[in-house]
Length: 180
Image 1 (cartoon, one colour):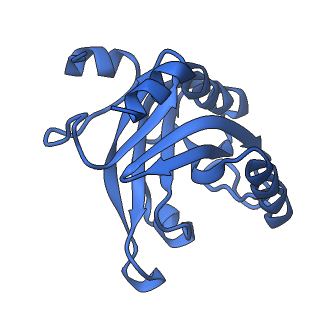
Image 2: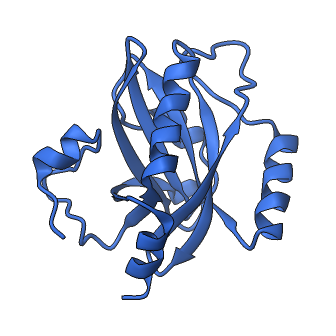
């Protein structure tokens, strides 16, 4: 099924001009979890929300099965920064392992700012090979959601790369697409 650029924009997914859904970098997510990320951003506005993406990685495609909301423990500037407590992250990682899943990425919101990574986002990102999903929330309404892969080999050469987002109606659709 081909989805037009306009249809993706209406769903709040911004695709870069050279980017297509056939891109080798892709994040697949079920509609329910995609909506939950955007709703989380609206609920925490004007502060940043944050959470973890659980799922599986196959080749260059990260498939999100479940999202986990986290508390933003950043007390100095929660309106433009986020932090997930290490204890909470360890707990989520254990739960994921027990469910046969892994951490495939993280999400957060940018209140009244674009859904683009900032220099601070890059400096504070350390999970190379994971997706970093950012939703812009303007005046309390989720607008655009983008994803970026943290690429590189070491901390010194890490960088964000644009990543296509594929939103499926249900988990079974994602599973069927993975077997093609």
